[in-house]
Image 1 (cartoon, helix red, strand yellow):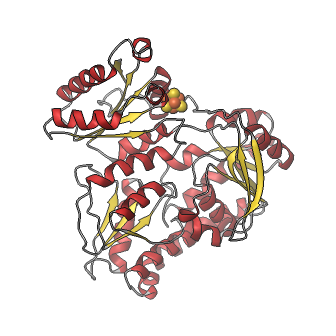
Image 2 (cartoon, rainbow, N blue to C red):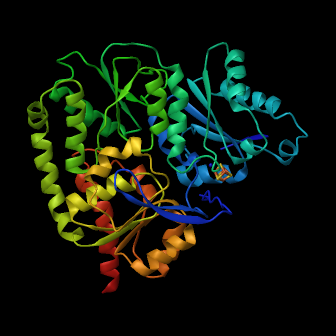
Image 3 (cartoon, rainbow, N blue to C red):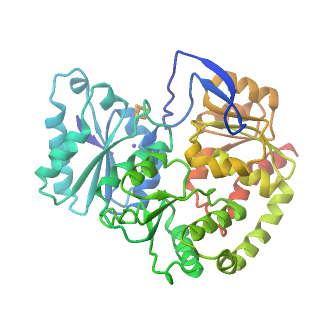
Length: 440
Ligand code: SF4
């Protein structure tokens, strides 16, 4: 094993290919597919998590492929010490000829001696560490004892066998939940990584709505410093800001928290409904939410108008990638007038999506999972105006004359909230404008 600083797409093949369409209890018809998938693995989450949690370090225990993924997706920081790296499993490790735990202890000791600024160290599991059954949870406990509590060391999986693209954040936050202090005092807990600028906007809105006035503090998970973990207990009401944090919400529920059912804060309508659901959970009247949001909503509506002109009537398909497909499809259909052709999601978590599904205009097709070739056949037959997909598929589809949008950009960019609603619409208008210009 050696220390090193790191897209390869985590494409997992599944021999069993099958597809079936089924109508669920809520009347929604979903095409369930199993087959080859084309999606990043959960290591990708390190890209935005390391920017958000400023005292955390992410040590991937993986292969050179994992290192390349991180270096390509996160970029190489030349002037600053990076806060992620890969401990590369060598052939000797994989062949069982070396004791991986000894090697891991050595790499971690060297890292922590060189980087006293690290407050929380995440050991991130990968496909190779999973295949050789390296127990990173036990390693994290052992290393925490060795460090005598100076550094919090936790483990989670970003393996492509277990996680898709955004699930890496869910497994990371789930690992933090047992560390959170207990408190039964009433509090709102917003879950899911938000850029600092967006978190600050929401803090101002929650304050204007009156959370401070009723003595209900608003906390965010993850916080900007892992050492500042928010409390959780019977008084905690959980408001998910991202649709892919289902396991974290379940773990918080086991600590006594209760989930607020709400759509996600994308677009003007989604953000207003999200804030309104939070206020209702604390008994705050909706007219206070209206008053607090009025100026921001008017500004966002003005900004959205020009993009609505460009997007209205255009047909869009989402390939399954980030779990943002349903909330973004809802925003594009309801607020921008786009026509949904196919919405593909990696997995359909109805607990996290119930409010969104109620607002979603019927797409022609809602699919769960992926059978890549079958999905591409449908896409070629549909020929939507815009296809949202992963990096690996975008260029080949562009070569076939389809206009694409990289789904990863929707996760990296600040897109939540009123002030970002026009920027969110612009992300979809831009490739259409580029294609129109090329046509001349
Ligand atoms: S965790 Fe697996 S899918 Fe992800 S980069 Fe490493 S080997 Fe590839």
